Length: 396
Image 1 (cartoon, one colour):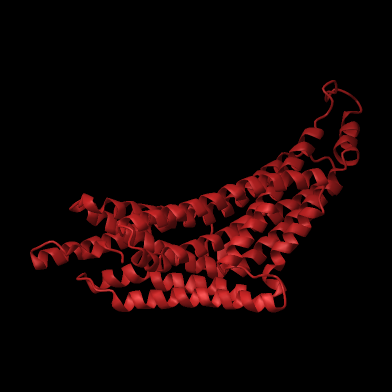
Image 2 (cartoon, rainbow, N blue to C red):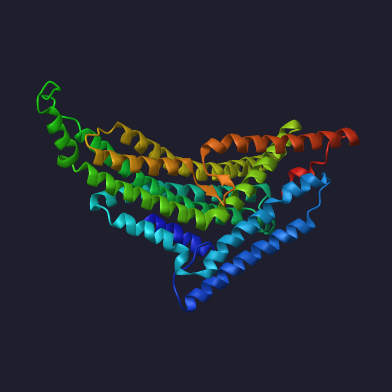
């Protein structure tokens, strides 16, 4: 819980999380959020209007598309922060209440693992954006005015979006840990179903003794019903998270994919005719490329992790011993529920499936856009007879 509080504190300071309080402090926080958003929007619009570079129009549009993308994504986050309604964080509260109702030892284990992972992610995000700011300062030769303007356009909005991604990833990670706990309980049930080593099928009372062990003695039916109910609750909470963050995830995917393509193309341009005096700018672009790639992968991987847990549970259910029609019906209901959940993976706004199996599609779109940009660049060089002006490499 402490890491979640740290994330909320940082997010509230940067205006991308609701304060959760009423009174004058709420209005101060709303004013601060809107001021930050307005500052970013004005800086981004000014950059788009004043951007001058002798590059093809389509390249210029794709290059500047990150700025309105950042404006849209941050506008969505600030909207929820300013709205400050209880339902804005109701799903997260429901997840914590659900975890709190479990066995105390299980609760401690889940939160310990969650805090370790979340603390590492939060520290990495903050350290990464501090590194980007340091590289930005060096690339401008410590011109503080130019650096402040550059960071207000790129680094500050990027940090706010990264915190928004963490606000989605953290509760999904808790749901994954809950499914891992269910999987472990199914594993224990499977081990308890094993008959005594001394018993063999030649024994006259083997079937009766085995039935008592599997169903009545092990309370398999009651346990499976409990696990099925918990799994259904986890699915409902996951769907609520998708409803809340769907638009944000869709905007983030579109923004990150476009920016990733443009950065990859600009890096290609640099190595075609390298100017090593701009090595700091190359480092900055590599960091930006890494950031957008990790954003996409992090969202996909955490949802794929949940699907993998359900697949493991599906396999364990099929390996359970069935000795009564009642137990068979319970297992079948559980299997149908898992099968339905697996056949309908989470989708952002019904458009983007959140599964690492879709990485191939993302790579296809990425390569198509990059090749398109390279062809435009080569065609422009052929028409002009000279290389393009290097100004398209400069990002401010």
